[in-house]
Image 1 (tube, rainbow, N blue to C red):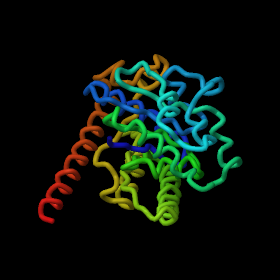
Image 2: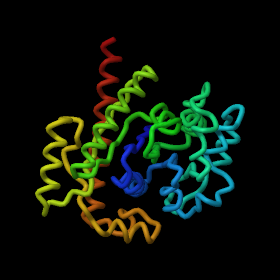
Image 3: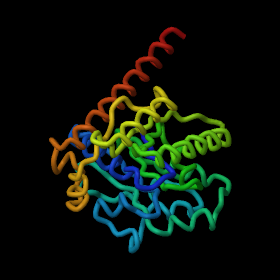
Length: 269
């Protein structure tokens, strides 16, 4: 199972849109998919038809459980409107975790343990992360294979991206591990000089860590959200849908290259 976490400390940059759109394309390829909502706002949970304010079950309950066991984890899996796709839902109670538990022993691995319990049932996982540093972000880092950082192509988003990358460095130093990340330029408006300048600056600062293409502004994303479906399901030919298809193909190709490199290293060894 390959798990990507969609993360940025700045809100409104397209984290949930990225999660849902990639999920839609994976579903079209008939991949078994696990979605994890770690944002107390519950945008992904609401998108898929559940109410975070009135949810009686959700991943929050695992943080108060003495141990993370397979039976409890399986009970928390919720069906979604997407085929072969299940959800670990968010409730607003997630917002209280840092105050309740801080970074207590073992609590940084709760999500990783939960995913491990059901990993044999899925091919891919996508984690929608909160826009804040805390126990939930640490859980996401510990549970994923790669980070995707959506970054709106404007000046303020670049400043937020600087903080995000700095935060990653601090957390990775604390965890003693490094997680590869890819910056995904979002909401690109080719009609404006500001958007083009921001994209050029992003590439100048972060180089190869910035994806080679962009996610354009597309009002069809709003229509998809209203319908409760990923844009690839609702309007597969929309430019936003086609952009996320390009992103998915890049990610799957990169994963394939990584696997091939590991296989060759093992063969030589």
